[in-house]
Image 1 (cartoon, each protein chain N blue to C red):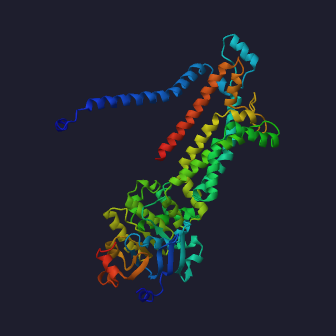
Image 2: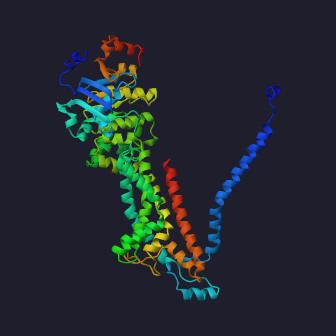
Image 3: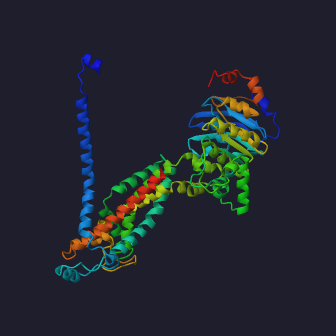
Length: 260
Length: 295
């Protein structure tokens, strides 16, 4: 059921090849192979504990922070395996946004946006920085709201604004791919819909991979969907097809609320 | 209530109320009792010490016995001050901090990064044991290491080394605890931006936990500020201001001990103690304020 979709995508943004991730001995993601199409929103969904976040975090090698996690398989970007690249380069190619907004509390809004440059010791002229800050904040539709308080610390922002700031921080570094790990699960419906609109708009320039436990969110904004169950990739295809005509009985059960 | 009485339970609420009141009184009285020593100490120090405190007390050296004796006999204020002790204390604390802060913070980072590993556990336990080592023993060790082999005589350096060893466990502990309280999400956010690991620590973790680290350092300093025993074996004391780290140096607590041994100088004990108390209280209040602000 997987093989049918791999061949269908030409010139993918990212190819995952037999990726297995294990916590100690427990395989949380088992032998997943998938191609992600450029300039699309791809949603990874499935019931909790199915390994969707684990899969996403494997893509920018976040797991390497923890010693009990082991990874096998390949993730190819421009035909290069990310596990052979320096981790720092991988993470610069793939920006990540986390479940809870996590702006740096000691930095101003301005510094948060250019944090990627600051933390990497890349010196920019004031003008360049100003440009990046304005462009990134406009991309996430936050510019109008914060342009007068750029040099204040970000903790007075609402959760939704903070999350958009975190997306801006990821965008500022000009990544090719943006990974989002349930970016709206800590937000209210209004903030959620703002971020959803934003993601649809952003796919013009970026490839977006989104983990969500919210089926209707996947249906609303994603072009492709990946359904995972118990660590395995069950089904992958166009979201529309999957929701109207699921190919696997487990997908159908999940979509109709019988599992998860 | 009536239903309860009908069912055979008697009304015991007034008894409970009295019990409650008695309990409350006990708590208040015992709390006051706990607070009273510090209040009594401060009262005594202020009453006995304020007469000696003046500008001269802060900027002049300790008087010689004869001058003090004449003053006491004439019923006057004892001349001179404890400038040699104040400068010595600051000199040794600065040097002890210069040794203990970098070592302590780096050790704390190491422990934080290697939770549950054998070497980290051993280090943490050793640091905890170190905290329990009697200060006089640290003085003895510093005497053997520094006085006998490095400075070839009593010195401020030897005093600083013994004090820095006393500070070290507190800084290690507070660094580790502070870093542990920083959400992992922040570390991940920094790493997700492709930040090299050392910069995550220097630019994200340390600034975020800065007030926590500072609190640990200030409490460490306030702990060594009043240490006397190790200094007796290392810095020895001096009757003039000394800023040479290889020479014997005085300190406020050392002077208190010296004043105690000289019947003519007893008047200076109280004012020196008062100054020491004020410094320690200030450090405690500042560190408390910083810790509060953090929350």
